[in-house]
Length: 287
Ligand code: G3H
Ligand code: ZN
Image 1 (cartoon, rainbow, N blue to C red):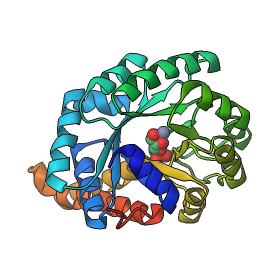
Image 2: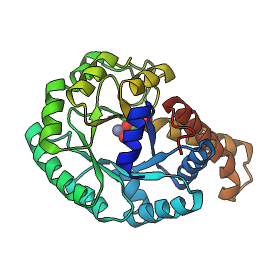
Image 3: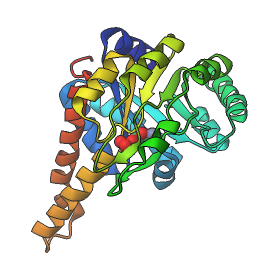
Image 4: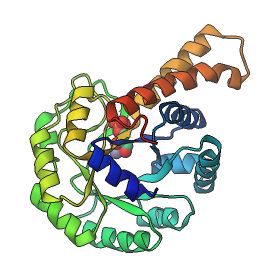
């Protein structure tokens, strides 16, 4: 099944596929183990920083090898892809299923022009393209500060612009913004499910993604999936689980120098977060 087949099935059957960021090899293993245990399709995604850390070639090889080893559907995505050249590089690689072209720093018109070019190239190679305007704010970390709700609301997806952006670019997936923000915060804003419903009505043939999947309550994520979200991006909660578990391991084993002896419990801690997300998204048992 292609990525398009999976998202079509997810839309029809009301579940979402988790798009989990890969920050380290341990996190990659944790995602594989969790998806495998849950018999769930999964998307792994790499931001430009994460691609830089691994190297593009290693990203591709790692995923291709894992598909053979775990025998589960592993979709590969370039997350928040920019600049244009990096997105083009990903399109040229074997193994990618989706590229997220993040043109949200550009003017709306320029974003449409550049995104359309990416869509043309990607579609020729059979890849899906995810587009973004109205920037998803925040950053994938544990924030201690409060969110400026008024400012956040200004970034919410404008329904009219969504229809225009989709029809002029031909993107397959739209990163929609309706209360979601990257990272976790002391008080997480509520999702505006009514707005999500309006966005889906404005672009009925386009898949919708939910960025900033960390920190949102299970009930709210389920409500968003019920309204058409088919891809939920998760990064911060994996990073936090990894760091907390690693700190604990280091504290408990001050004399252990073999890293591979310290990491099994760290991997399990991250895998447990991924398994919980898979349950919330409803993708368990869909293979
Ligand atoms: O693109 C990646 C995500 O949107 C991750 O967001 O760090 O809030 O889970 P998060
Ligand atoms: Zn994101």
